[in-house]
Length: 332
Image (cartoon, rainbow, N blue to C red; front, side, top):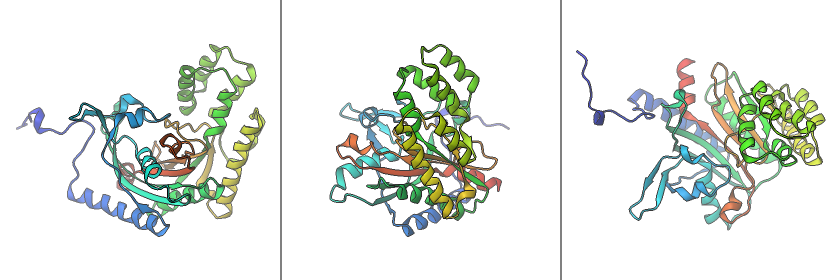
């Protein structure tokens, strides 16, 4: 006999219960990462589950407002369930850590909440993230430290067949800044580059009054991925000014340092890597596990984020999607 539950007896779309076995496995994963991050000098922090809607609305390049889960406080102000972990930590650092000027190493284990409009993402409105943030360092060694820790995290959890795709946010931003592309056109272009949809990208560019040099460079962006040495050589030829070359040089240095330290096998380059969180400003990266179709870790440099809270402080970090890691552990 099938028993139909009243709507109030169900749970909402996008969230799930965890039984004892699943919860123990999740806590074991978290414990492993906690120890790793603590050993590397990253101290754990926690931000409120509720934040003011304006906090995210006023920050450039954050989660789209339609993806935030909103509610009204008793004073009438709009609140959101925390849609992102990095922005609240940047707020915390900018307002509470000004006695320190560099080497602020923080870690977090928290849930974020987002509305998703894609059918395959409807069951993922509550996401558990684990990550680290390194504030106060703008040098190449800081980028290397963070990427190494992302790789070490995968290794500590027992994953062997994975890749970290390295990209460079400012390379593309510089290219766009040199052109006359509007913000609306840019959103369409970014989506096509991220999806590596060259034919659709060509159609969009054909409708824009843009110099041929810019069109050729933008059209090449989805194809700039793979073996680092090859990608860097192609990207160097497409660079239209010294700033683009400078950003490539930084990426080259990061790759070389990681290679010297024995991480080359885990690395590839993807200059078409464009994160939907547009606050990234330099080296960015995504981590993929073999046979899993979406990234399990996202990270990169965001040097201008704390400036929006009144303190100009360089920063870089990453966040793992723990639910995705748990799914892969079940498969493996």
